[in-house]
Image: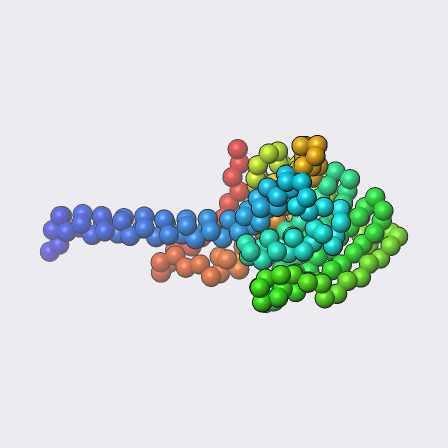
Length: 220
């Protein structure tokens, strides 16, 4: 027969193990979600310093964008401005030494694409570039996206929205782009967490023998 004290001791041990497992998973989840936050925080902070980069000059800004993504293991990072300018940087897990950047200049109707690679010391260099003048290939306007209007002076997570590419549900941390001369916000940096990336993370995460992880949106 198992004594009552033995049962209580076993329950206490199981409860302690459960709490330790939850704590480990919280750290794991926090680290995963912190990656894109680190990228946009670095970009937002740098934008406040005159001379760091010029957001409207692709050959000045895009290498800097790719560098911040590489240092913080970013996947998709983008910026939209009050003038309708938009740049998106992408890195894949399969080829992390490359950074692909698309730029839409809505006011001038220009679309540019740059493909960067990194040296062994982590310095980005341009390996391919092409542009299309005239009508942009799509009607994307960053100012109309849900992530554009959620931020003020710090990092804020957007509500769940329908992502443009790849199509599907997504959430995005966003931080302000600041004009260092005028000292006001002129745009937004953001980074996608698409369903694809979230499912990838969940599929690799094990919680004990039978545990499951569920992601829900917080409503406030």
